[in-house]
Length: 208
Image 1 (cartoon, rainbow, N blue to C red):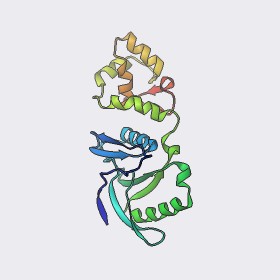
Image 2: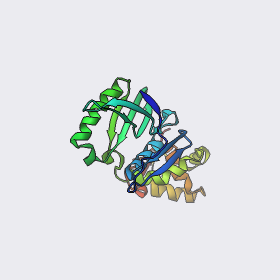
Image 3: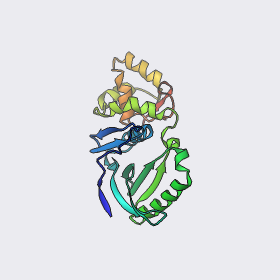
Image 4: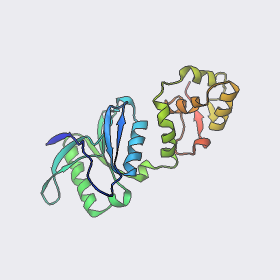
C-alpha cells in the first residue's frame, strides 16, 4: 500500500531538520541530517531536469523481519534511463548494522516487486574529494541561463579544447568577460571537469 509523500519531519530535540525546495524538479525535501543535505544538493545538481528527482517520495507499507506491518519512506527517488531508483541515505557505519542490512534486504525485494531499484547511498558515494564543496559554489550558477554567447567568446580561437581553471580566469580578464562565466559554464555542462578536485585545480575541457 502506498501513501502520499511525507510532509512532516520527525520530531526530535537532537535532529537538525531543514527544508529544501527545488524549482527545477518541483519538489520540497525534509532534510534531517548533514549527509541528507549533501545528498539532496548532489542529486539536484547532477541529475537532468527530466529525472523527476524528489525527496521523501511516496511511503510504502511492508512487513519487517518479524512479520510486523510497518511503513517506510525513502530519502530520495528519481528516474534515469528508464530505471526508477529508490534511495536510502545512511552513514556507512550505520548502514552495516545487522538490523539495517536485514531491513535493506527486505526493502530491496519489496521495491523490486514494484519494478524499482532500491539502493543505499552513504558518505562514501556522496562526499567524494571536493565535490560537495564545489557543488555548493556551482549550484547558484545553475539557476541562471546557460551563458552560450559568452562561452563561445571565451573559447574562440583555442586550438586545444583544454583550459585550467586559473587559465580560464586569466583569459576572461584578457577578453573582458565576466569571471562568473567560468562557474556558470561548468554548472551548465559547457565545460566538462572532475568536480572531486579542488575548484582552483580543475581542468576544463569542452566538446566541439
